[in-house]
Image (cartoon, rainbow, N blue to C red):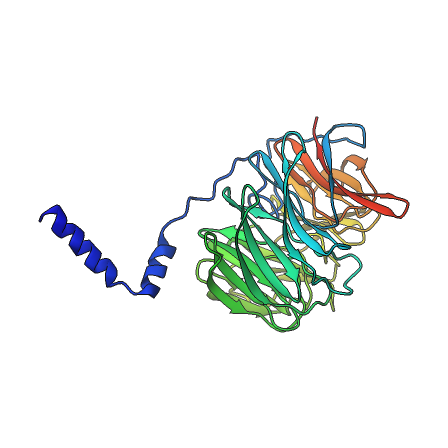
Length: 428
């Protein structure tokens, strides 16, 4: 067959493909795999989506305003989203309430110099929300080529993708949104998609968007109740599962298709924390209208929880290490439980209140109170063993990011009636 005949044959077959089929074929073209260095922190809860940092690194164990500060940079506005660190850049979402502007910021990882600021939404801020909430409580996610962020704007939730130079690539409306306390669900890249959620009283969505185009690949409706967790994808029960808790449910989806794998009644209505697993059990927690921590079989084979207690782990997410569950209650009590039985091994009062989630580095757990005090202690069932305490700033709600032997912390400093957020890079 001549080359000309081959070309004509191919063209005629391509013309026979419908628009829908072409779109489906285009969607199947594999994206560049999501790759990042072990010294990066690409999305909420870190590389493994469980709060574990690389175990072989050595971040500082002591710091203050003048000790072990590599650099610090002012952050306009206010937000509770954590820093995202990929390659030579640090990304952060923020909201300037007076100007009603929601933006993504990018800083140079080595110097702290602000490289760019991209304003995504203007106006449309609600008149009131929970006093602890912000209009930038989601954490940025990065797939190595794009950065993704969720914002509540003008009574709807939008996901936006930017390139690494801050230029907008696409923006997709996920759902209308009725504000109750706030919004803080973070995007989660997975395969060729980025998965997002927005539970609310009007009825929310969990959806997968094409990372290149922003097109909705699959979506599921959610119950009409307020709820706040980020979608989290974990290897549990022998397969990858997408977990959402709250809305009085514990729900598992296939992250590739959106198919519901299993769902049990039992969680409370309003949850914030991200689910964790040891592979055999998943641990959920919530705070309204009831406080609870509960373990479920990760394969969904048992409707009732394996164990449950009434501890209030509402906002800070939990950690699992070597068969033990470590949590910091909102009221400042750190607790160690046995994952499979729920038996309390030990507990210790740290003092203060907590919204930031703990991060595990090797055998040490780092967790910061709302007043800016970071407690470092051993992740050990033998008992509470303090490693260090460090004070920085006056207010902290964002979870620190720990990667590449450094700590990236979003800290607020109060000077009279003026509040200034700072992004700190701490290292030896």
